[in-house]
Amino acid sequence: MSDVIPKQSPLVAFDEQQHVVDGSSPVLITEYPFQGYHNLRLDIEAIAETSRSSDNVEIAGIKLPLVPNRVIHNLDGDNTVTAYWLGPDEWLMANVDENTVDQFDAMEHALTNSFHSLTNISSAMTRIHLGGDCAVEILSQGTTFDIDERSFTVDACAQTMLAKSSVLIARATSGFDLLVRRSFADYLLRWLLDAAHHTGFEFRRASR
Image (cartoon, rainbow, N blue to C red; front, side, top):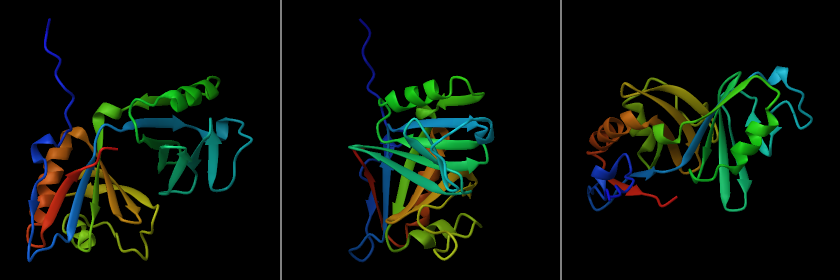
């Protein structure tokens, strides 16, 4: 019988790394591994939806933002599905549990008669949260995108380049979510740790 290889986080090599300066850690970096991600391509104008407003459209209980570069958090008990606007006909949906697929099966069923693409890309993505007093300072070192809170508000998102990596940045109340391809996660975290070396940082891994 072959040995079972346990599933590992893309950033397992960095467990519990920290570099405290002057007794503080102004930069808090948290990885959220093993979450579910689905990419949806769909022409909204081609489907007949009854639950629709100028801001969003609801499919199988999941609201998708229609306003460019916005985020909607769909709460369902202990489960949250976050929908990110990527383009006029494209969304990324992030589920806190990669094994919870019922909602997406329901969405696939609801779109049976519509030309669409719903792809599970859970194994290809991970999320890094950057918080703390120096989060803006750190991000500004690696991107020309304007992340000032006056223009990039809470629940705004944008696809851009960060330290030569393609990322989806979303502003949260506690900082910034960086959604990145698994193959770039190691490089991006190394860059973040280096950029935060003068301020002090702490790296954590969330259970969910």
